[in-house]
Length: 136
Image (cartoon, rainbow, N blue to C red; front, side, top):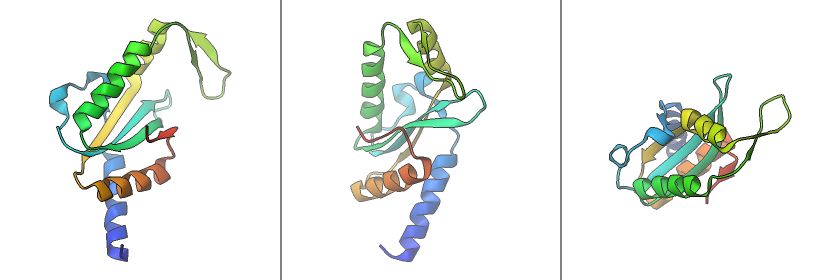
């Protein structure tokens, strides 16, 4: 890859990161393309910053995002641990955690059908954002 290609890739990554996010749990199948791409799932903190939970690429954004969301909801039960910046962890009820996620979980995606471009963009975005999870 030459210098110009790297420059374009970094600009594309910056543009992707700066896009306005969608509310993850409000997204419908009609909001997502039936195409390959890269996505970021983040959690909005109380101070307005975002904790980047996952960055990944897929050959079908619609299927990947809905499968993960449905699997999460199907296994989400009982008490959960909530970590608050600057404070110790605490147990919260299922409904409280779910409500927090529904209100604060964000999604960004970009359509990119070329697998090499998906991999390169995922790597650059992950290096910039340092998510909790990178990949499946």
